[in-house]
Structure formats: C-alpha cells, structure tokens
Amino acid sequence: MEVERTELPGVLHLRPKVYGDARGFFVELWQRDRYVDAGIDVPFVQDNLSRSAPGILRGLHLQHPTGQDKLVYALEGKVFDVAVDVRVGSPTFGQHVARVLDSETKNQLFIPKGFAHGFCVLGDAPATFAYKCSDRYAPDHELTVRWDDPAIGIDWPLDAPTLSAKDEAGRLLADIAEDRLPRYGA
Image (cartoon, rainbow, N blue to C red; front, side, top):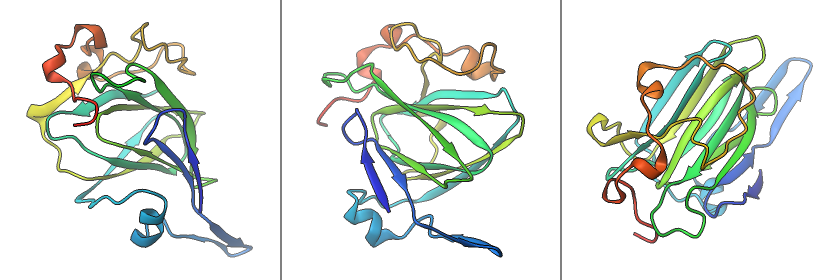
C-alpha cells in the first residue's frame, strides 16, 4: 500500500495494492495491521454507504464533540473528495485538501476527527461511496459548513451542484461559534 501524507497533517491519501488479471481484481480495503503501520490506529465502529447521482454534492459535514475519524473510498464511480481543518487553534485552520477517489484505482482518504468532509460526484455515472467511521452517527452533534465558503476557497469541479436542504443551510466557518468546533491538540 502506498501512503501519501497530504498538505494537512493527519489526512492521508492511500493507494491499496490491487491484484488484477483478465478475470477481474482483488484488493484488501481494510487490514488493521497494515493501516496501523500507516499511522491509522483507529477502532472503527460503523460502516456507511451512500449512492449519489451525477452532480450531487454532499457536505461539508463533521461531528463535535463526538468526532469521527473516517476512511472513505468510492466503490463505484468517481468523486472529488475534500477534508477541511476546522480545529480551533490549528496552524492549518480553514485549509483544505482535495483528492479524486475512484473505483478504478481503489484509492482512499483518511480524515481524522476535527476535519469537515464533503464530496461531489464526477462524470456522468452515479457513485457509491463507503465510509468507515470511528464513532456512531450523532445527529445532535452534527455541523454543516457551507460547501462554497469563500474563506475556505474549495475549487469544486461543478458549476451548479445539487444539494440537500441540510447542505444548502450550511454556515460559513467564521459564523460557527468556536465552542461548537473541535480544538487543536485536544
């Protein structure tokens, strides 16, 4: 497995080894010891699966105080995946990284607690997207940061994405009270 440390400390871009031939392919999407060796020593407790049509954008979501480490990847299709550092006091607060994740390469992104996460579907086909999470979904602790917050400056590859009502109502990061956000080093 190849491990790329991204511009944001703790966010990792992973490329598992894919074994393929004329019959198809085989890949280990998760193997605890290998991921611990890569720096991901996380007790995942929940797996999520979403399917989204072309043009859909989901995010930017996080939970606090019950944060979630996430390992995300596309099982089908292609997505533009984003992690944003929202930890108060972090030297990279408000900065983001983005990677294209697709079912062809089987690449993954590890997003630690304290980062907001979002993605949009690329191309003309739907995407099936998987998440391994270190804590259960806690709707009372969920926050939504605006996908188009100009202070974050994500260059989304969609002109007019389709959003849920929750994502449409997301708030600018500067408008979220600091006590609602995670703390750097906590």
